[in-house]
Length: 449
Image: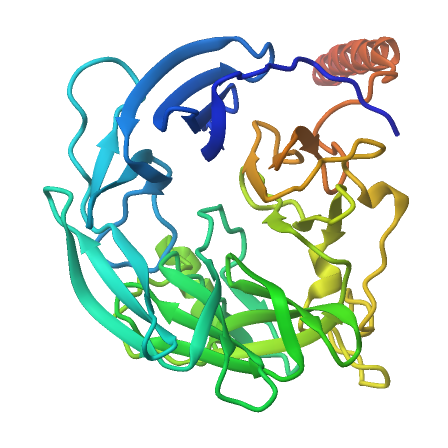
């Protein structure tokens, strides 16, 4: 396959990308970046033409920009679809959060309620790190609500979930039971290197950033960096290098609630208008984890395809050391893939039997013959079409592309025969009108006779 550039734009003052997202109508790009002077710049770019429709400068000190969705209390259900941009500003030793106005003029808007964040502090003497959970107050101050100390470990990676639509609230297991998918927008995943053991190992922790509760812990022997973690809905991906097998591996985890739900309960909830239960981060809910390990190519950056309603099968996106952007069908990384010789069930009928090697096809390479030098990050967002996801990868180079995991099933092909379709519609309408007229005449004639 081949593609051509619709437009390209050079930003001479660009230094570091802070945030990239697409407006809900998929017509505009929101870009936040640092210029060479350390100023935070904002640009609103029209997707179809590349024309900059709005520009703003927010000053210095911002090291992180997030597009958040206001939630009700500490609910772990999916947030609303109203986006708000907030910036984390550091002045000296103090960090404050500010809401950023990107539409219109005037004073900066008030901060929404219930914004939680996680901060990391290295402990040089103890050779460990301290993790603090903080809540953003009305004035942008950060209030500590919990903390956890990890001695003898070095933090390698930290990941937070990307807000995205979810189409499924439950999943059928191999034994026929229905388990609720554990989707928590406040979940944090971090990877650390243990220094206390004779042979250092990597550890994965899943923590609720609101309550500070440790939900899951995994220690992987013979593992070392580079290590990365990623959260997508109720899936967690953990990447590392295995020094024993000399391969790059990924641990795929899927989180579920522990209480099965019956079909009748799900029907009753659907009739009530809400299949997803309202939950809180402070509830002592246990988490059930399904897990499998796969071998995969190296990755400098990770992403997951996002679509407007979450109906299209997801693809894992990897930026490799060779400068390629690779897409892998997430179904190959499903931790519920049945083992060889395992009796098939209705839940696993559409899954391929487990195999540790993940196949790559020529169509898997989104960047085709283009190479992205030193890729560092991948960001994805939804487009106006359900079949399409927008992907941006940057390092020394900047790569942007549309991606359709299941092809453009909601778009007619360019060679579609519109003339035949129009002719068929006209014939059907004419035949409908004619047969109705004949039926009416026959009914009238039979009544006269």
